[in-house]
Amino acid sequence: MRSCISCSEGSETAEEISETRESLAWNPGRETVHADGEAREHEVFLEPLLWGLFSLGGFITAFLFPITLFLLFFAAPFGLWPTDPAAYSVFVLRWQDPLVRVFFFVLIGGSLFHGTHRLKFMLVDAGLRSPGVQAFLDIILNAVAILGSLGALYYAARGWLF
Amino acid sequence: MSAIYGLIFLIMLRDLRAGESAYAAFLTLMRTPPLLYVNLVLFALVVWHAVSWFMLIGKAQPIQFTERPLSWKLVFGINVLLWIGVSGAVVYLVFGGI
Image: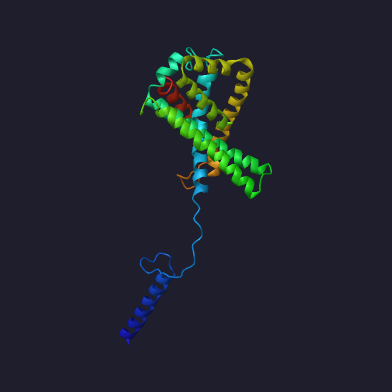
């Protein structure tokens, strides 16, 4: 009798485990593969990439732009800095430093991807909602961001890497 | 606005590469009164963008190290301190210090 109860308890436990295993999503090696399975939904790749670049560009713009703009365009004209960091003799020497070149490449690329993506959604919010217009905006604005970044890469690498 | 400045920097690098006279002409143009004041307004918008971005971080994606997410004001304060530190690093590392 005792062994029967133990046996029945044991089988219940085994069933429970089996049911649990069937119901859990974690089920390595036991996934059924259908040869004629339904086609998966098209994987979205470009949209998250563009939003990621927008976000990265937002951080770059927020952290690096104010001080850079201040030093290059306002410090000397308003007499707020002892030297002129934008003067040719000063800036051309700083430009020899690879870090400065990388800095301006990151600054330009980040700001272009951030700004063009934001501009696209400003225009969409303003009423340019038709799919054709949105596709046109995507092409034009992303082309500006990509070509501008490549231009910045060219100026940064020219005279340093080639 | 940030894209406009991105393009302005691109023109600056092109003129730097073109030589001293082209670069000096660019700098003079950027510092003539009408453009300087337009630039000043755009600069104010850039600073506002930075401030609003830091205000947004703690709200858009609450940061959670403790049981409750950090308040956006604390996240804003930390970001402003980071901003000051990063700006100091830019002054010394990119522009060669004061």
